[in-house]
Length: 213
Length: 301
Image 1 (cartoon, rainbow over the protein chains, first blue to last red):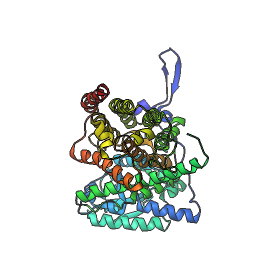
Image 2: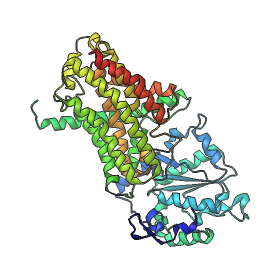
Image 3: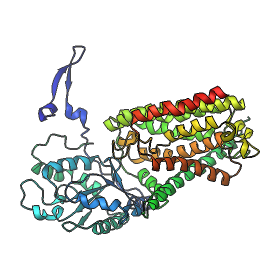
Image 4: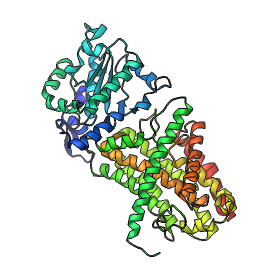
């Protein structure tokens, strides 16, 4: 599929009628994200406990760091005992682990996947590459600072961080959620224009609506 | 049977118990699986946490009316199944709304959820949902055949279409169970049971690692919560039904727990031993041995 396929155009239906189609409108919903205020204090406490003890990670490895998340499923590290599980679809996941360097091409997919996740959602940035670019700091096609593009909850420094560091990072994330500070999704909705401007600055072939759902 | 308003409360109570039993069974079986793999495994109450989390997610998006109704239909199938199956034989409280002819209704409820899910998942628009649901419907149709034949066979055997009466006929010793009085029908039904439990070798519908993750791909938040609730209720209800039809029913909660646990472990063990069938293989398999056994069960009656 090329970019021109997404242009608005008129086509002939099988009955010979002329109909106008706008693929960007047909394939995606482009409503802006809304800020969802937390519910009452008591409910939010219980909910935050459940959210922190049931972290569903989106199975999307963006860079070399993805190799460090696999051992977490094995008997040696066994992340399941902390309530961490992997989900295949962004709709059901609540944690996005940006594993290592992020090329501009991947960033586009990351943005789409992140926007398809449901509020509340959290971002864990793994490795130095997400903090300042790491060893790819002067690369022509990777981004340097992730928090220009997505609201990050936890950074795990290192190149590469060991699986133990990841587990420690998840414990940190749990603490943040339990304290009610894991409001990345609302932050993204509030500063939507700023994030979008930053994203569009690096993604030059922007062929999707501003918000995918 | 006369209807009394208090029965509604009793039914809600048995629904509550079955739901919790299903949730704990899920947790424990995953825990056992982890221990076999030398892992510590999830906490046994993890399914509850996941459920609370999904129900308290703040945002939901919609794909249309059927998309909402899909999980509702699915849950209706699960609850309907438990409402018309007696849990404890001879108990006024846990007899539920069992009436003469409920076997037919139960067979219908077992298929109902899958149909609802097909409509809902199709409206979700995700190709993985569509693949999952077509496979699910094909496989369900295939295993419903031997199951229906087996159930008809025992209906002929006991000359009744009521689950309560079938259980009553099996009382008075282990040799009165359908397992021993009609082994062919039991074998056909227990093979069909494997197909209905969504475990390997018949888990191509959800097909983890292949088409992640089948029909519920687009479902999230509270809609996924409803599906999870049903995933606790529906298998537990099926276990109780199979126990009633083939293993003499239960006269106490202990008997129910022990019998259903072993029936569940049957699907777990088979799942651990055998790798996944493709959907065409599983349909062919159901249309061979279980179907022949089902026809035999009818002919022998």
